[in-house]
Length: 67
Figure 1 (tube, helix red, strand yellow):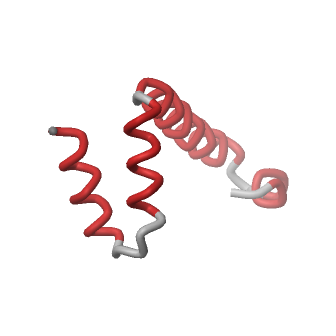
Figure 2: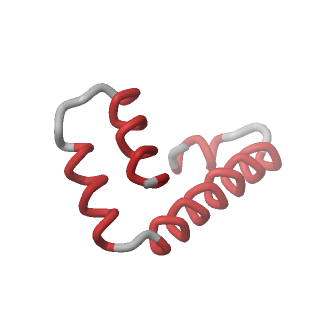
């Protein structure tokens, strides 16, 4: 969602609602990331850079979280 879409929308109420949902989602993600230990963040970053597919990365990250 960009500035132009927000400004030129025929339905500002809908755009406002969509913006709030996106903002809340980003805020929750940021809060959850702050709660992760730095060591786990480093491991996740290493896995993300490994070149695996998204599904493989998700499986590896899940294994880290449950171990």
